[in-house]
Image (cartoon, rainbow, N blue to C red; front, side, top):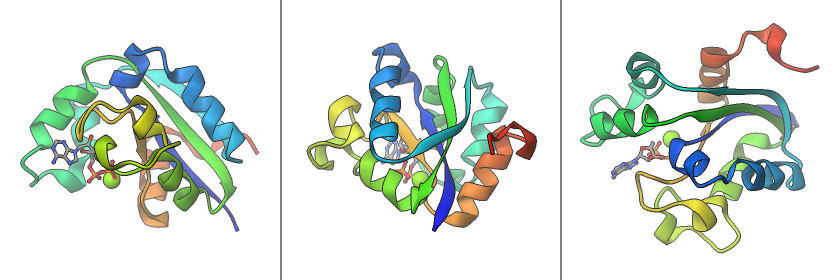
Length: 139
Ligand code: ADP
Ligand code: MG
């Protein structure tokens, strides 16, 4: 079933000049970009996006990281896009990520881990709507 997921190329990966490599990995995996935006998060943008993690000990540090430089936000579409992207990303901790995954290639540690990907249809809907109005998605 074709579905959409939200991906973010995080500030660490943008600083490493890995935007092109990461987008190439999406495309090779059948995850087609249907919206794409480069931006710099404000603190409130980061806090609102990660509101589900508000109670976690790493929340403040995560938000500080996410505003530390520009990011690329994309909507990816394809069969089983949510699961496919999570597999392509690898484990949250790059040290535990499988060979061939984005986090294995570009992540530094459990916080600076190169990419975000929605983890369910509900979060994908919220996260896509957080950055893109429906009319900005390519049909
Ligand atoms: P994922 O991005 O794999 O879905 P989570 O949703 O659990 O992982 O966490 C969101 C983000 O918070 C992670 O991608 C990572 O940047 C950061 N993070 C997660 N766990 C930790 C941790 N224990 N310490 C520091 N940062 C963390
Ligand atoms: Mg998550």
